[in-house]
Image 1 (tube, helix red, strand yellow):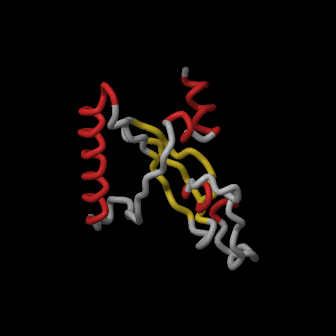
Image 2: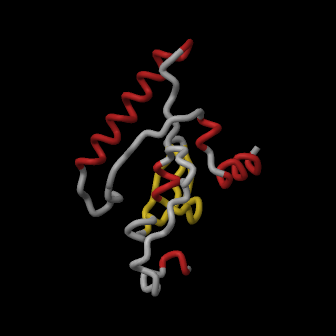
Length: 126
């Protein structure tokens, strides 16, 4: 799999940011998405390559619930649980747990955050 080839001649060349128009997506500007690794109730995990350090990472995308409107209470509770999970995982070092690097929040409506591969998979699974 050439996605994992770390001996490329261009190892020390930086990839151009994909988000040149400034839409504000850190995911799109910092990473090149390679493929879907898995999906479940907790989110969707993608294999990505960081544009700056050229290393391969697994990025878990999780949609936050709205904390507005009729679902405000449930949204707040679910988002608190998610923040607690991120905080807990960031403190764990264990040989059977994938290393945690960082988390961030991006805005947008759930449908806007789906990449084409996710939309395609959702359409195939419907």
